[in-house]
Amino acid sequence: MRYTVLPETDIKVSKICLGSMTWGEQNTEIEGHQQLDYAIDQGVNFIDTAELYSVPSKKETQGSTEKIIGTWLNKRGKRDDVVIATKIVGPRDFAKHVRTGGFSKVELGDAIHKSLQRLQTDYIDLYQLHWPERNTNFFGVREYAHDFEEAWNDNFREILNYLQDFIKEGKIRQIGMSNETAYGAMRYTEEARKGASKMITVQNPYNLLNRKDEVGLTEVLHRENIGYLSYSPLGFGQLTGKYLEETPKNGRVTLFPQYSRYHNEKSFEATRAYNEIAKKYDLSLTQMALAFVNNRPFVTSNIIGATSVNQLKENISSINLSLSDEVLNEIDAVHKDNPNPAP
Image 1 (cartoon, rainbow, N blue to C red):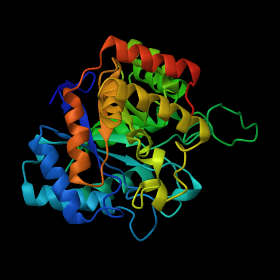
Image 2 (cartoon, rainbow, N blue to C red):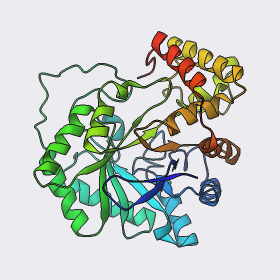
Image 3 (cartoon, rainbow, N blue to C red):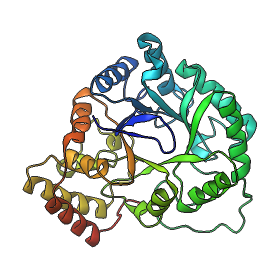
Image 4 (cartoon, one colour):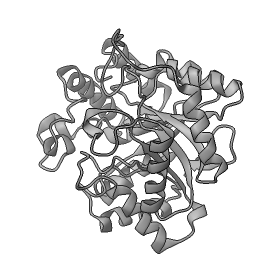
């Protein structure tokens, strides 16, 4: 395993982070524990979750993923050996069964308290805002369209002040963003320059089919020293190639058709092209896609997810693969012809 540190901290994290959002829906508690045990044995020390999970989120299973991690932590002990990241949901219709108050002090306090209980821990290493309160382009929206009727007011400093109180209480150690844009990252950074706590990471989707953050956000990451946690590096399984020839019975998109973000015609076209590159160089498409993300200069950690230990083995072992200049050049040629088909 390779390691790095979260920016401006002494928190060492593995370059592979174990994602967990299927636990409690597609995976049982036992299977979640098996994945955790295997990942830890391979040197992974970074685990990502959220109060929203498992997915698709519903009232009956909300919070189940954190509970599974909590029972594992209670059984295993050695809490300080792992880095736990979780998130509070923002306003969104599909999350109304979790909370409706946005990032107010009351909602943040309630969310943190409940996550700590479910995780069976006294502190959260990295606490993230799952998506912005304001209207902006995330969750598959390519272009920003301004809403002139939007009621949102700039509250970046206010949110940071609330989070600072929980840092002082020792309930959370560091804070981060998720599904955030270059604008949001810079606004939080501006407030940090004025003395507020700094958002040290942003967790966004990034993969061969979605490199839109390279357009503006990656400059912010480099210049402002913000870590990047990439999620969906395999595009909901599309970049394993398993959807190219058939529809797998237990695939996530088969089970939950609403997660079709990476399954449009242009995404299939690009995936076929990437698959040809992998075959040409005797690589698995899965590992090529993951290695591409693992080795990007702005990526702090790559959040992988699996529904079986066999998938997990292949995903984690991608850390040992470096892509040649020839492979990278061919990848960039496909990207140039078909950029960001699934933003």
